[in-house]
Image (cartoon, rainbow, N blue to C red):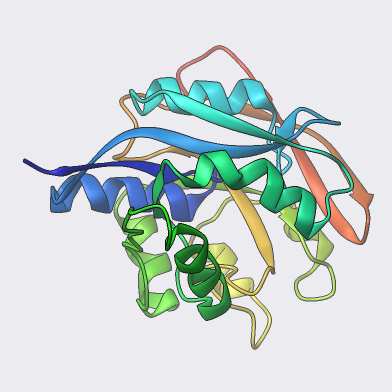
Length: 220
């Protein structure tokens, strides 16, 4: 019998692809998603994705989603306090290779008796990014750090053209915080999550592209 796991779900391409990989491997059964929400804006923390779109993702993935509200601004102490109970259930994460993030989550789970899993850990990110795209993953950039990539990247599709336009030194999967995304279609979903473009704003040094839920067969 496979182990059961909650998947740390950011709403972005990496966690969506992690879900796909875990399902293909069959070693664990993902039974739900775990997501932090900025309670001041009712959006996924850092990715700035509306809670309504998060719920639509979960429905398309045929999984329940558990949300952890975070205050804004949120200190490390507040984050740890809010995540304390949730970490007891979280046994899987989509993070790729940030050693400090991995160590942090392993330390927080050390006393729970649970085993964290890192399904995308250590994969070369350029090859991984292209495999995601070739595998049918579709995502839009919802947040960019204009100190690392052009502000105009906000709202763009995560595709081959975007990878070609990345400045030298930028990670193809945005693993150094260059950008965050919203996955709206792919093999991890039973149906697409249609979205349309909203306003683009700059706040706290980042550029955010709002995505709005729409009814229809495809994203625009």
